[in-house]
Image (tube, rainbow, N blue to C red; front, side, top):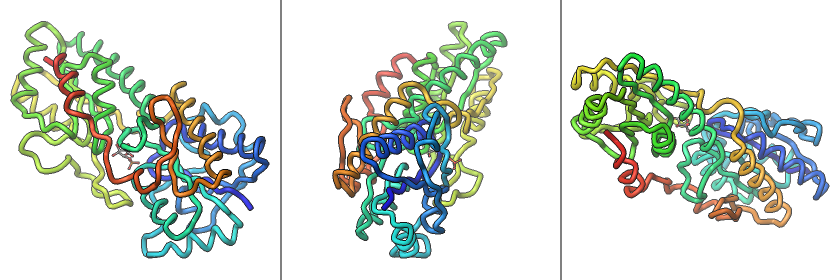
Length: 341
Ligand code: F6P
């Protein structure tokens, strides 16, 4: 019997560190065998798997991405009982599955667990939008990359006396924008949780310019300005049917230039925030999650997700792992907004 591992949804720095920790502890301490399903649930549905022995995971803890690939395949799409996926697990003699993913992936895992499949979940998302864990790995790396990019934008902005707008990821929540913006000393931060008006934004930008600063505005992709109905999306939908976001930064740039007369430039960080080497913090968190996940499998704690509470790794039922967003609280936004303008 083998333990299956899959990574699903958008990739995230630290995925390989989870895989490494699971396989290392699982083989060395528990004497178990592992297989990796390729490209998330697609590998389970199509029976596409590779062996994961100790030699396969050597040196991968510091690598970005995921060595087993990822996708946004939904095992329940066109298959209401996920019978095909369950048949694969039986055929490949898989007695437990470690599923590393975000909201969509963990929802599918919860449903599959309802059909009796022994599953342990590991939370993953750079957006840090899962409420059942204090933090997800990938977030710290994304914040670090964004902060470094803003520091660079500020020197060119200062040289030209321009306003610089930077768009970061954050579909439903603005944690990346809030932390990286605060770290870089942004003059305004726009997040999905706050429907800031154009007037208020223009006020902050003008105040910064009037003090001789080159204003920096950080905007999360999911930001909706006051009076707007939904997040800016002109690129269709992804395979989960969600609108593909991106482009709000350009809209903010045009609006600011028109309202303030300040020459403004937009930079969209995009997938740069998600690629590359994980930070030391993310490597450690991902490794601890991996160690806890394989312990949970061996001790039969199925239908649960590993989670960080304070500094301790614990478990929560998969039912509690999804459905409630980890939104930026009003108090955290108000605290940051003291520094705007
Ligand atoms: O998974 C979260 C996320 O980082 C969102 O912030 C963003 O909308 C999405 O990924 C984009 O991912 P992709 O380009 O892979 O669809």
